[in-house]
Image (cartoon, rainbow, N blue to C red; front, side, top):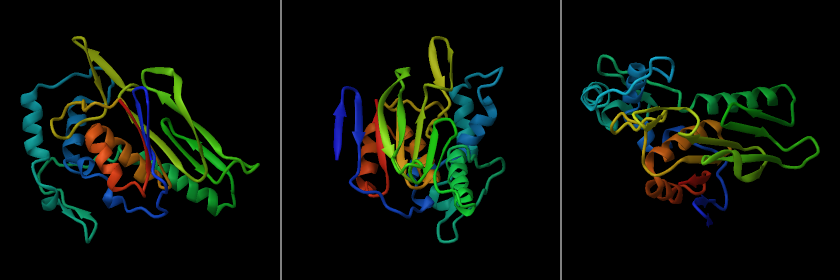
Length: 238
């Protein structure tokens, strides 16, 4: 189902699949991931001395690190990626916290813990419900006013993960630059979304998709959700 609330657009599937395949994370996120790593290496991670590089530098970096097609560098049958040019690297920052929260849930289960919640800054994952059997309630922050929320989700055994450009950013010459890089051009994604929240059984998948759909923009993100609506729920905020 889908519903619209002011500028907030919600896309909620009827059901969510129990098993996910990480290799099916949106292609827009997977392709040229090496380029994103190189761009971040050039510019730092919003530490002292951050700066914006010229389009000439970014274009050259793109040709060096991201010029191969997905078919050239991926072996999906073996689940391998070949870094076949000097300087190519893989940045796992887009899935690291989601992967970590999923592994923490596994550790909880292995040690007999039956109810838990973990928050890793924009990444929340739960194990079952609360000790009294009720749902966990997770608020979704309003990117236009970080002191308020656009809604509260009731969940059990789910990951709720949000990506947006409103927390980690800097301003230069009157323009805001955030940390989510569009691999197509090496600059912060500017495709019409301010935040994307994913609800899924799988924290790793949710973390990857939240970044992917943010980069895609609303139209492509909606299309991707419609094609995979049995795998995850999403909230797209323009």
